[in-house]
Image (cartoon, rainbow, N blue to C red; front, side):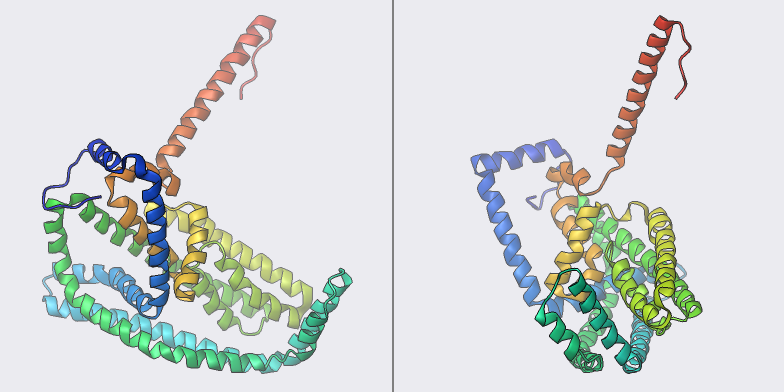
Length: 397
């Protein structure tokens, strides 16, 4: 969409016609240029991932706590105190989260040596089972024989040291939160000014903030409930490291589609080491029930249309952003994808036709229901006609 100083035209048909006129016979060339530009942008984001990931996380945190500022200012609290309250709220969230992860990490480092022999024996059993299926490999046997679970502690220590770049990320996050909290006080006025010349962009920005806030807050609360229930269930089942796997379940609740499978693997392994197949089956059943209730029943009803992305795009976005900016990309995949949608679709009236393909299915579902009702009425009428001709009463559907 071409922005200018003039008021945005409200007629999507005229916008679409002007775009088509500009493209002319070179549409395929423009598509290829767009794809090439997208590849370059992807490489650029990947190269700047150590900066972009914490910055975007700070943006999401600021968006989530923005209602606190609004509520305080409505009650007459001075803007400076409201800004300080936002900063303190974000810092408290980061402190609680960081402390919880550090406790879980320490427990995991202490848990591994206790089960070193069992994990080694389990790895050899897996190799023997694969060999019994005809999958014979000297490399598999060598890996099973040389595997030392205690080496995972060294790996995790190196990971923590590599995450000592985490210090840089924390500094970036705290600085960005501080600055955005101060700038956030001007955003409502800026959006009102923008709506006079670019109303669609202003509406899209407000909708993006509202949808991301709703998704992240609901996912956080449901993730806490899911992690707590999983921790309690694993504690009752006697699975070692129940608190660790509860924290893992909470983190994986932010990863759509595949987070459940990532969260269930460790408790299955450690449950099998201490309780055998009965504990493994119990863990699978408990996790399945909790996941089905929280993510398949409760979350869709609460989130509603805040995330208008279909399942295919959601799954691809997790993989894409995880590759581009690392594990944090999988957690922030939905907000990042909604941002791309904001820039390319929601603020561009000439591509509204693509929204149903992305996941806005309200109109599509209405058409399907209408078509189904019409087909049902037609079958009923046809059945009634055939029963009248044969002299037998029609059966109701």
